Length: 198
Image 1 (cartoon, rainbow, N blue to C red):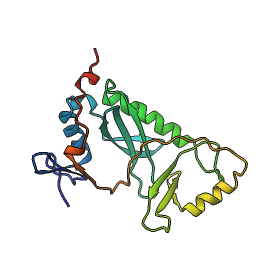
Image 2: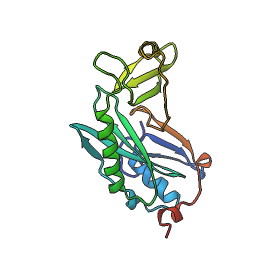
Image 3: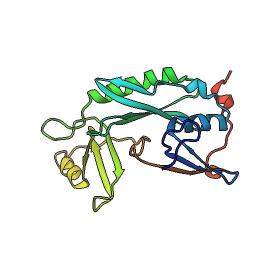
Image 4: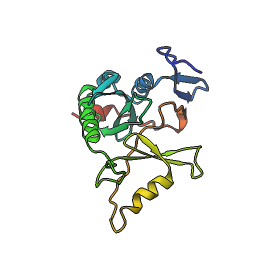
């Protein structure tokens, strides 16, 4: 178990640097490192570590992409698996982004994907994850609960003669996931001009 080289917390981002050395960061410190590396001011994206929405606590993180900053709200409950994210422009500061993320989470929590009788609602969020414990190596997460592919197919059977309209969005791996990165494979474009386009 590696410790973050900046703050001493448990590290979950492990990077093989161009220098040949290895660096280990917790998620918040990885965001700071990535901002500095790509010409962004990390203080602009500082945000609360946690938010509470509808009585549920979420940890807030972000990753830097060439298209913007993706913020994640990761549910702290061990009983359910709730993760939401949004890709926002570089110009938006971390506090404003967190407020936007909070609204997304609030709306998502209002919309249950499964009705009380176990049928799929007209709209909702469904996560698809790798799972070693199933023959298909896939698990479906609906309203924070895990289901097998077989369970999901049974849910779809109740929707015969319906059309599914869907869109995919990036989310976050399981909270205990470890990230192993090679700096030479990571984007290197300088994003400073995107943070302050004027």
